[in-house]
View 1 (tube, helix red, strand yellow):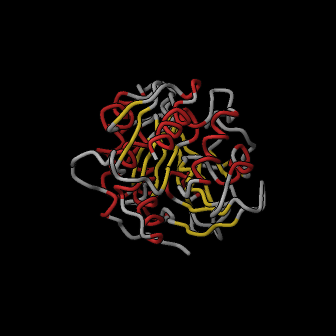
View 2 (tube, helix red, strand yellow; view 1 turned 90 degrees about the vertical axis):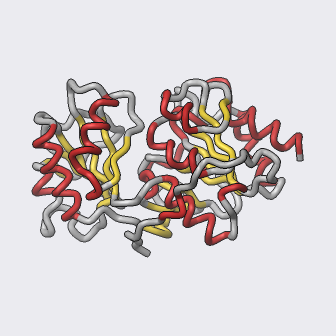
Length: 294
């Protein structure tokens, strides 16, 4: 199912911390958060996730990764087996294992909006190069650097890749990636948001000047809000973890939220709490304490 509507329920005003409300769902980012720097899930973290599920708390992986990169945690899904991928652009059932996942929900970036974003950002930041992330395909411009763990399906200018009759035209676009070789990453994010406006949602999760551009209103927070609403779970019953700007909306929305010890300053400001770094199993530390209180 494709959904492009705005989800205003994913934004809330600051309120009394929900630390005393029993959690029903844990939402955790992967890279820099649940995963160690070597991209592994530590035995301690595996045990903590299993204990949470055993206690009746659902665990959602909420990541900027595409579905095909979810093999790193596919062995650790329990119960529902769902993950939110592409910064909220897709909800994926991981039960089938690597290469056999099923898209449950897709919130695509309209090609018209994507082309507008490319044009406006080319004008605002000359030298920007692009890649296009679709449900199954990955395409990039010839000058786009090798930043990802795969070979692109096609090389062409972004305008050709996003054309209605371009490569992968039968598949929805989940997000476009915009890279600049010399601009400061935070400055690039601010510049792009001003340039693109409400035509798309712009964020970043990389330490380099690499932006992730999704449909209007599409974010980790808004898709998580949809999934929680389907389960009758309120934001006060959600505990969230993250480390980079693409986690800010989710951490602001959740009743309890934790910035990792290695988190970006904007994430620390957005979260209601802080834990130790990803390499020190910061997510597991909080889950263990949470279960002890129960």
